[in-house]
Length: 323
Image 1 (spheres, rainbow, N blue to C red):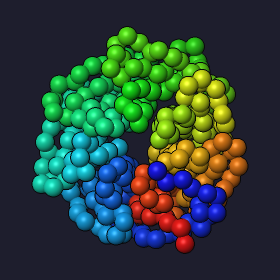
Image 2 (image 1 turned 30 degrees about the vertical axis):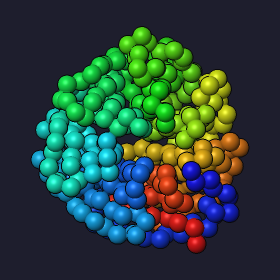
Image 3 (image 1 turned 90 degrees about the vertical axis):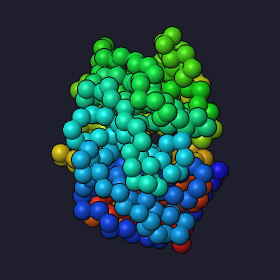
Image 4 (image 1 turned 45 degrees about the vertical axis):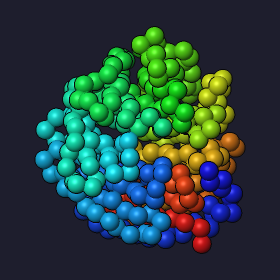
């Protein structure tokens, strides 16, 4: 696991800039076992990169279905992504053959997030604006289970594939994160963590939800009426460790910038409507660095799980590394 220090993050510089896309990138994922990186974009193209060599490897067109929220599935040769055309289905793509292997139908509105179970990569969950969370197995078309919520949700699975976290807006007007046993999700949440300071008047949408690599912390990204907020939660007690405003303003008509926890769980990176990348101490809330280089809104940022590398995206993909 990569453990960052402030001086390392402050030395980050663009190591490679890729300009294959003609529209904003809407999904990005690093393989957990190799140096492969994959992106999806509003131009209906999926691109595969070698993040260590800084090389573009392959382009796959998805003109019929569109693509968003791409994630690696059960191997670095396969990826799942949400559809943006024709229906609200999810598709499993072989990155080797450029052929679709399976499709997963059931959602009736736009998919908002996909989460793959580490170590059990055949298992994944999807969240949608239809207020459901669905459980899937990549080896079959059939949905394995459905959880009905009151409003649109965002979900994540912990690194040990034991806990499913679902961010929801409550009927009372507040917001919370519900924790489910992934193996017994139908029994309901075993814990509920209220999120303080977020209400219907200020809430716009969920932007991210992720566990630290040791499962001790849970990072929640929220787009509010004043900007982007990151809330670092103790995953055992539900206590808010820190709430930080990451950016102000909005990308009108565009996606809300998402936050990404570093593998060590100590730092958070976030894009912004204006382009700069904010690097913040997740425990103290102190600003560590601001990375300049993008000219457009940066809705996607992601730390590499294997190396001291950060990927950020607008229409271009930028790989940042220590100088």
